[in-house]
Length: 269
Image 1 (cartoon, helix red, strand yellow):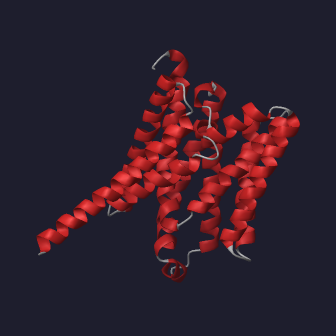
Image 2: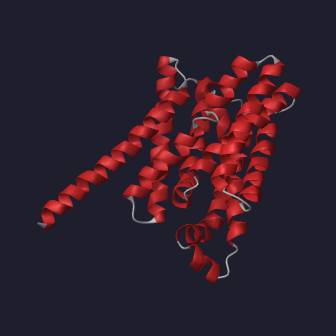
Image 3: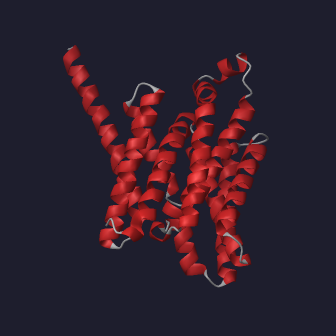
């Protein structure tokens, strides 16, 4: 499990878990779960087109994820944002499938991009991921206060002179960078579960944002490390374990809250 050839696997999984833990808290606070589901599909489509054209899938992934974010931001301002996201999501998924089908590498590449292939992360991909993760974490550090204010008190944020649209656009680009760094590891379909379930559990259990971010990172790390170990031992897709463990973490947090609520009611009688 800790053989030298798996060092990139553990490092990539750790990077993805940390960035998902930080960004995911704001995804939950802002109610942007649907957006966090759509942007990875944009990166999938870009990677598929790049593969079909013989280019770099990582570059295609990044460009397409950013363009998807721009499209959601621009079109969502002039109509129902959820409808725009739903249409883009289905279009991008279908476009990626078409590109892979025409290239003749449909089965293997579709599997890798949709469900992740963490055991084959190269050193160059790991370096690219590390740079993106550092950029995302720095951006989140700079955006944390305005993001929190616009997430919970948008009218107050406007009263304080904050440009809510600019902050929303910046966060959308952060999500695009997160998807670009994470899709090669956990896949476009299952990044959603890592970005939402552990952070949602952390937000439910913690009263402050700083504690929620710390606990979210801990949950994501536990989920990713356990998923890697199980994937190596069983030779099953890592995405299955990521989704399953993320769900269990969230259910555990909800049960914990329910138990504490019942104890509080009993003590108040």
